[in-house]
Image (cartoon, rainbow, N blue to C red):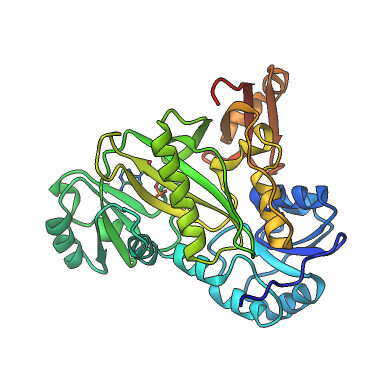
Length: 366
Ligand code: AMP
């Protein structure tokens, strides 16, 4: 029988690895529930440091700092998936780290992730492992073009990937991604990008939020609209994918699965792109349109507390404020029905997520 670990008590401290905006919003949610947070991040300019009771600014390899961190918290979670596995192993020997390392390992490597999806009967784009320019030529023969060459690790927001439209693009492409282990992935002619946010606790209780429709610009998420303009059958299938992934990993916390939707009549109409073992940008809308946000849900799961309901009370469009978008602050603050969220980053850079807005309107359906 599975042993349920001890629940946290009010006033206990949750350690958060990573100090970006996701860590910041998790810390805010924890404090609302009467829990403290201790954020660990190597970047002295971490947005989450502003809103947490305790923080440590040290490298993920610094064992002394990690030891002190472990001694100061009741359990550990994380806000991004590229935490070195040695860091998690070091902490795991001392206390509970949630979600479990297996979820991290799966999502850190695009090849492992795709094999995992396939192993639980979730459709993916065709893919082929690529470790050299030679392999790439073979892969192109196997997969065809157009296709995307993506590094297996450390890729996000379109970084570490090149689009191969025609055979002329193939020469030198492996070098262009830094000659790193990669996969070639077939281009998916999707009609929409959607995502499912699921939360699961230790008891195996799972909840999912309404399916979100995402629009990317320059491969960075620009808007999330909920409800997504999809039929109920597709929404059910997408929720099911979130549940299947969470169950398969015996997951504790919030996770997101990004999906491509092929034409609605296609046999395999939902294709998984990637999963994130953490709260996700396409779930920021839950802050304003649901009683319980994804951030609170994650903290509840990590604390061993009951999950809350995911009902949505409004229709909503979340828009990321990227780079100089944040400078429209005064106009955005004045907009009717709009919640403004600034991540408090000290430097505005092109392509950097600086904040977001949630624009809510009365719920039309359901
Ligand atoms: P990723 O870094 O894998 O999340 O990719 C970023 C964005 O690139 C996705 O949200 C899609 O808009 C696009 N993209 C990635 N992979 C594919 C694919 N196999 N087919 C079509 N578009 C893709």
